[in-house]
Length: 254
Image (cartoon, rainbow, N blue to C red; front, side, top):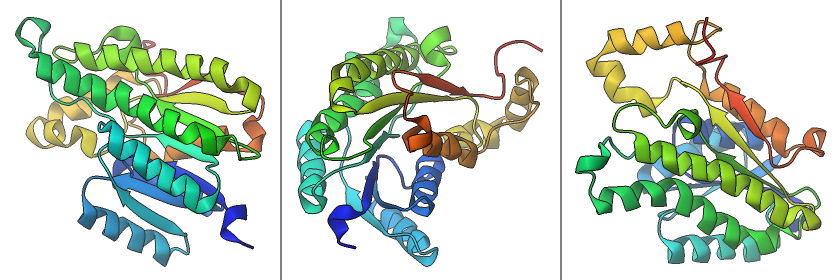
């Protein structure tokens, strides 16, 4: 089989946490996975791990907040393989905490760029190549913070994730005529390095988080990856513009 017939999936921010598990799962589903990140050493390590498991993988280092880098790299991938089947806009993050009164414009713009601009840049660049796929999908990441505005100091993070929820639906409307499905996942509290600082400095607080989760535990990255796997599969062929909560019933009260 020539490479152009292989399924191609790009996962941004995929050198750790949920992104790496998504890459691993899609690799096991038969995709050639393209991992993105900004740490070349971490990228090389992850590619080696995937290769050891028989997964065909490549690493592309670029900053998802940089329009030129995103556009250039995704175009290179699309031209190399003739198409893109799946784009997973996994990259994003809290970026830190700041109350609005003290928030600098630089911080505001950084968080918005990390979560919203990155989704826009990558999706726009991938669309011409997704059109060439027989089962194209974009997966975005929003958050409970997009509905409840986040905790103290996380207001702009919540704002950016609310925007991701809306751009998911807007992209789905825009791309339906091409058969490109666009959905989002909204992970709850997942046990990853995203929470590394509070886990190490305030373990009792970290442990208490499960008390607000109906299933009584934190989620695992693999549990998010399995939902992404479903959403990009033909089993989800009639799903678009949806946001799937993956939070064990978090925040619903118990």
